[in-house]
Image (cartoon, rainbow, N blue to C red; front, top):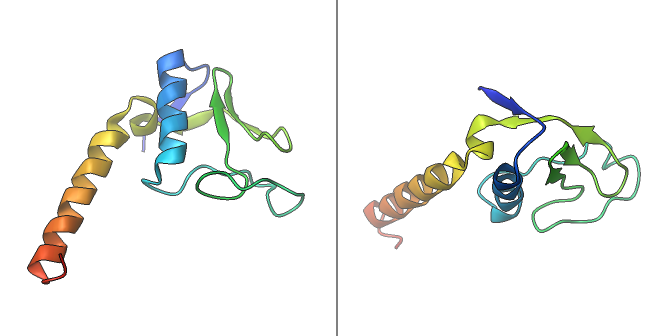
Length: 97
């Protein structure tokens, strides 16, 4: 998958942080989250926060400088909406919704 590297523009930071909190897919998390106490974010323990300089762990300072292009450019919103639509259709076909 193509990747985008920091620094990121404000709109890209906003897209990444929205992605982290949307519950669409597993968020990016700190690789040190099992080694030292880390807070639980809205979706998981040790969630990274996007900044112009890259991802940062607010608990230990770990930094990561990349994200998938589809997360940075906001395409994830369309992909998530399509996944939800397909899930609803599957539920209807199975008589669950």
